[in-house]
Length: 401
Image (cartoon, rainbow, N blue to C red; front, side):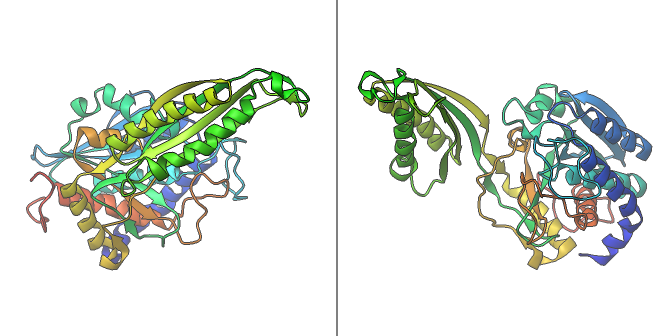
């Protein structure tokens, strides 16, 4: 990492680390981030930001201006935790059983707060920066990003581009992954309810076995990606829940399935939705049962704009060196509601390495690597300085310039 930038933020790291660990100890679920939002607002006010609370529910936006430029940039961090029982054994582990920060949102929030503090005290930029602290990224649908957008996020806080960063276990701490175009998948939820006819296990000929029908549906679903989807257009159909039966000697009359369906194009997304529905109905009918299918659209494909991605990758290379930045990373089947913000403004989401040996996100032993705090703070600071350059700092063009 650039030693000058590291030295610049070194004095604020202990207090930002304390904030990060405090957030980790006190996780809050989607749209219930009241304590987190209050802490964020207090920190931003103390740094000298204009602060707007209650955006899209529990969202917080801080605004800082310097110079006379009319250009503006938005930086987004998510704040919510997950309904999971933490098993890290850390001294700052979650104090709420069954709820933890298992996706690094505590780290995302802390890095952006640190950058806000640094930007406020240096003000080496010319324009406006909005720091956006978003609720409810983990909700899956009707989440924080579209709620903030519906509440006038980009009308009330205009921005020429918007950027975000997410922790990424499995690669070295302080390394970056990024990709222009489709980077993270669309994610939809489909539920299938099978209605059969219950009866005695010893007289199956008088029943319509919903469990057998559901099992047939599960098996048939495997053919959709293999035989219907274009093999060069990634797609995943996962049956995460199959529930049926109440006793070993009773033929079940009902079964319930829940599917996670992921794709990278609208064409394949529509194909998966339609084929799953028709296949489930046909399979159930073949077993003398009926199937009802409910499609619940989730997050869209996350599309990084080319210019913003090249710009962000350039800033990352300045900071950590070209060997620590992969700017053609493989697409990821995980999803992110930052995709909605990228539908409204050009921008980019980057992935920041959390360590080779890091537990995966959404795992009960996951923890954000605090060694990333100075890297994230320095990255956000430099990105703003490069996007909103003064006459002294303008090494390369910014998106849309």
